[in-house]
Each structure stands twice: as structure tokens, then as C-alpha cells.
Length: 496
Ligand code: ADP
Ligand code: MG
Image (cartoon, rainbow, N blue to C red; front, side):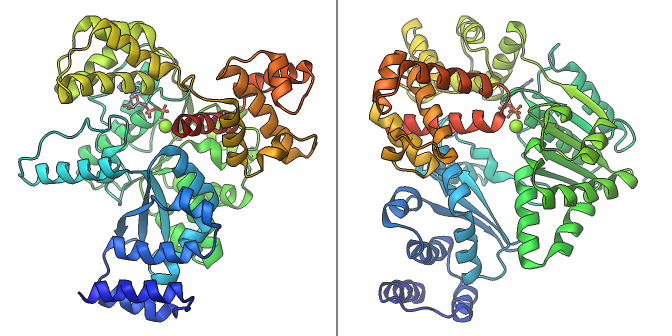
């Protein structure tokens, strides 16, 4: 009842534009134990006043506060899909963190995850099940959502789902696997640092987190392990610099025995973070602490990486993971089905292994849909059904997408107007998005070059050819670009 009054008070205050003194707010949070929803409601009110109405409705309306860790002040914000998650993270992180900290000064960091109503419900049921309730199996309700992300131990950040037992070894990853095994035997002494690189969805995160899990198990939690994405590391450093709390960050990262950093390629090009990482790296290294890193490419191919950091990485062990062959893809799919406790026809698994070859994550997505069909909907997966599932997973964006959608989504992604996108402007901020737009019109809609030129402000067809070829070539070398295009494609899917 009291809480309802407080929420009401905040709402009225907001509507009337009354500025609530931070200290007072904090007292409310502390003494009346506002729950997550109530805290988030207040924060949303704050954010609403700082960004435009359409942006608020599009991006923030469906957000939620998933968890708040009292001990280390970490907050997890849930967004309904990956596109929204990336968007909010890149555009509104500062505002969100600011508003949260205004309300509660003990909050120190914000992370984002894909969480929607189904996921939240599913998680709830899983928890009930764990606690002895008799909830139905809900793991497959939303096959591709990272449900288990929510059960991560905040001290280590490691997801218990990733184990060596569930990691299938074959010629494409046996060296990386062997190196990880050697490290588990002899932490910090061999292969330090270990640098594993390879394409998207090939099991890097799985393997390096499994290393962390096995080390924790083998040494009865006596060895302190910390897993972070490089993004998280960057956020920590940026936050510490801004709030003059560098000492805390130093302690956090230097007071451990095994540091695992995922997707280290993003560290490059950010001087303050690189420097901090370099110091952390040296301190740990000099004390024989183990460092394990993953990246989408070898150190030499991270163009912005500082020389001294690169040579440090190269001083250890560098191993790549390659694309798995058919046998291995099949073995992985079989193992995943077993993990889920589901029996699936071998012919179906073979077909998936044969057809979905680019990355394991995609194959797993197909498998989850098959399981969903069989288990939840009680439907037999016919050849036709399988064909549909594979088709849907491999041709990402459907034909329903119209030209206007591509222009709109690309413009929105880059924060420019659709008119600007097709205009004659040669400004850098417009040229790249325009080229990406033309590339997508060809890739997604299959338009002819003259048609693309026509749609993009009556340009010549050679301009369209040039744009397409440029982007197509760069995608393979520039993971930042690749990532952007993936996100835009995802956004297109969601928009239809
Ligand atoms: P990356 O980090 O290289 O992009 P991930 O580690 O996230 O890839 O792997 C994507 C998915 O594929 C995960 O669900 C992971 O468990 C699974 N996977 C990848 N390789 C293997 C493997 N060798 N054995 C079992 N599962 C795998
Ligand atoms: Mg990864």
C-alpha cells in the first residue's frame, strides 16, 4: 500500500515536472524497499523527460529491470529483442545509468539482456521447478532466448551451461581444446596467455567459459575466476574514469587467478581502456595468473590494437577454431538433442547438419525449433516442415520486406532521416549508411542494380554496383561492419 502511494507520488511528481531531490529518492528506495518494477517505473519517467517521445515509445517502453544485485551494484535491463538491446545499449546507456544512479547511488553498472514476457515467465517456471515445484518444462517456449544467462554467478560471470563435457571435439577445434585442458591441469604455467580466435558461432565462448567452469570445479572454488566480455571491461573502465573509482576496478581485475576475456577485438582503439587492460594484463602475467582470451581474428589482424599489447598476446599461445565439417556438425546436433533429453530422428539431424553449415549457433536454432515442434506442439516434423524451418533460419529476412522498410530501418539504425539517406549528400555519416542500404537491397530484396539506383535517389546503376561490391568485400574484413549489417537485418525481420 505504501509502495503504491510512493509510485503514485513519483508519477504525479513527474507529470507536474517536479524535480525530486535525489537524496529523498534514495531514502524511498532504501526504506520502502521498492521492487524492481517500481524502481524501473521511476527511472522510465526520468528517461522519458530526456529523450524524444517516439524514441521513448519505440525503445524504452518495453524495457524492464530484470535484476539488481545489491552487493556489487549491477543492474540487468531486459529488452524484447537483440536489435532493441543493441540500440538501447549504444544510444541510451549513459542516460539509463545516470537515472538509475540518481535514484540509487549504490548502482554501479548496467548490463543488457534479451528478455521478453515469455522468457521471464519461462525463467520463473524454471526457478519453481528447481525449487521442487511441478511446473512444466518451459525451456523450449522461446527457443533462441538466452534463458540460462540469468543463472550466472555474478562473482565469476560464468554460465554453468558451458562445460567441457558438452563440448564436441573434432579436427576444427582439437588444438584449442587441448590447450584448454593443459591450462586446467596447470593453471597459469602453460600457454599464458591463451588466445583463441575464429568466426562467429564456432564455440569460442563455450570453450573459454568451460575452461572457467572446470577450473572452479577442479580447485573447489579456491581459484578465483572472472569472465568478462571486452565490452564489460570497457564499461567498467569508462565508468571508473568518470566517477574517479579506478581503484575499485583495479582491485576487481587484479585480484583474481584466472581472467577470461571474450571478444577482445573490441578493446582495440580505445586508449584509456587499452592502457588499463595492459596494466591489468601485466600485473596478472607477472604473478603467473592465467589469462584466456577469445577474438574473431588473430592479434595481428586487429588493426587498432596497440603494439605492446599485440606483442604481449603473441608471446603466448594463439590457436584458431575453424568451421566444423559435416561429421562434427552432426555430432554436435546429436549431443545437443541429448542434452535436452529429446530423441530426434537421425535423418532429420543429418539433414540439418548437411544444410546448415555456416555456424553452429544457427544449426542449434534449427534444432530448437524442431524440438519445439515435437515437444511443445506435439507435431511430427515432416520433410516439408523441416524444409520450412531450415529455410526460415537460413534466409533470414523474408520477402515481405519492402524497399521503404530497408530505407527506414537503415536510416533509423544510423540516426539519420530517410530523406538524407537517399539525398545527394557526400557527408561521411551518410555515405556509409547509403552504401549499406544499397547492399541490402541487393542481398535481401534481390533488386537489379538499375532498380536500386532508381530507388536510391535516381542514381546511376554503376553507383549501385560500386556500393554493393564495396560493402560485400569489406564485410569479410571488418567485423564491426558485419555486426552492424547483422543487426540491421535483425531489425528488418522484426519490422515486418
Ligand atoms: P562463438 O563464441 O565462437 O561465437 P559460441 O561459443 O557462442 O560461439 O557457440 C555458439 C553455440 O554453439 C553455443 O550454443 C555452443 O554451445 C555451441 N557450440 C559451438 N561449438 C560447439 C562444440 N564444439 N560442441 C558443442 N557445442 C558447440
Ligand atoms: Mg562468443
